[in-house]
Amino acid sequence: MTAQPAVQMSPVNSSSSETFKLRDASSYDCVADKFDLFTERLTQPLANRMVALAQLQPGQRVLDVGTGTGIVALAAAQRVGSAGMVTGIDLSDGMLATARANVARAGLANCDFRKMDAEALEVGNQSLDVVLSLFALLHLPDPLAALREMFRTLRPGGRLVLAVGSGAPLLSWNGLVHRLCCLPDLLFTAQRRQLSAPGFLNDLVKKRLPQTDVAEESELAHHRAIRTRSVATLVRRAGFSVLGTYWEGHQTMVKTPEEFWEIQRTFSSIARKRIAGAAPEKVNLLREEFLQECREVQTRNGRLVYPFAAFFVVAARD
Ligand SMILES: C[S@@+](CC[C@H](N)C(=O)[O-])C[C@H]1O[C@@H](n2cnc3c(N)ncnc32)[C@H](O)[C@@H]1O
Image (cartoon, rainbow, N blue to C red; front, side, top):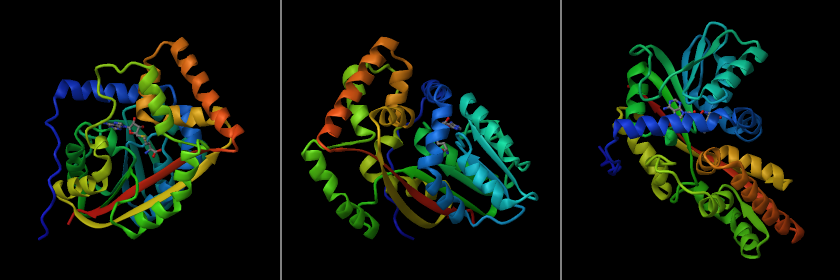
């Protein structure tokens, strides 16, 4: 047996945890359409990778936790066919409404969406073949409770594939190659010819919009440097055997400052939550400042970069 590194997570207070969940869900309600548009463009390769890692078979019962607008659920429903069933769960009414519209448009009868908390699944013991979860774990105040729920609902031999947004693991071949490929980014940034998401908007937001007393990110989200190790450790602690871990990263150059603003204010949890709670005139000033800086970078022949990456954990309930 290998020793598992400790993952320090503070005890979760239930009233602050409920407030955190409500605020997280409502911050998505008003950006669901934009989220859908951008996730189709930016997340699709990672959703496809998740479904491939799950090795889905026709007839399987699948749960997609933190489904958002259903990008993973829809891809999974195509794989399990009409004898299978995929349920996507989420706490945001706006995201669920968009997911339901997407499944209706796709004409899939084997996929539905339900409002449900990942930490308290209303699903029977050992009733699922596969649990999937893309980019949701870092939104949960008690990720270990959610992982234990996933374990409880999977049948023995069932498979979990989850992914969190993360930089490349430090000590990995992938990570080394990725860091070498990023060397030009350092040069461009030093020459003030590159702005990168989500740091650029987050830094501006932190300067210009006040923080409320509700946490903006979960404790696990703060484990930036050791996030990959923390996530794999939590998966084991929930009872799973980890079969493999994988990292995949991409970046895209965004053409216009306006689109760069929309992508970041939609995907960055810190920016989305502070903007949702701020006065419109403050948001307009912030947006103007953001656009102005982007235009200055573009006049120096610079670039607006949106990196997106996922660390996947594939695990089984023995
Ligand atoms: C970053 S989005 C990812 C959505 C989708 N999986 C994707 O990759 O496009 C995170 C999602 O998790 C949902 N979420 C956050 N906390 C949740 C909870 N406690 N239970 C269920 N869903 C939750 C959010 O509402 C949001 O839709």
